[in-house]
Length: 257
Image (cartoon, rainbow, N blue to C red; front, side, top):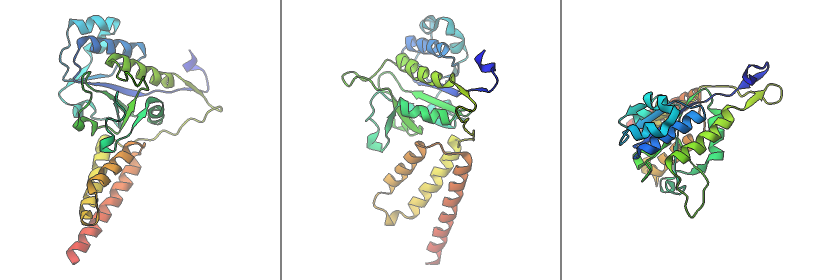
């Protein structure tokens, strides 16, 4: 096998496929099937409307993926433990009102490549209305599949197939030492790490809110910037420590006035 050749490194990704409140068993089964087609098996279902014989029929020989699927009651539990969370949308401009920029899948693939050996969640919304505002807020970034402007929204299982096909091309690509440099692997900040960082930054903005015109926009802008980057656990701790010290200084100055 090529993976056993001397000097060859095979890229691996820990990808978690998350379906939020899938509405049709046929899509759940079809998603399981395409996951098996491309070598993925970690499926999370958030409050599926039904997981019945129809789902198993369309899963074909991927029934094991449905048998082992993690069924949870909310998205927070589906992405727990992931270092990076990617939301998907069929309408790229949908979240721009909240200063979130959706990027084509080709750009998001570079993030997934940088995140190898870390747990990544790719979140797909409901067939009828996608993700709600609370759910989009849990995602670090958003991606879309470039499609026809006349009919941009794809079927759920078809969208999953396109995304996993693109990811699998990277995962199965061999890197030969001496031709391409093997990237240094580092631990990226977890969801909890980033929540602590956001809290410290938000506290800092609140302390300065009387001097700021749009504090809420400043908070969202920082969240978006972090969401578009691959921040390491160490970098997250450094920034958290910095914001914590600035908070202390500002609070002390207020007490001394």
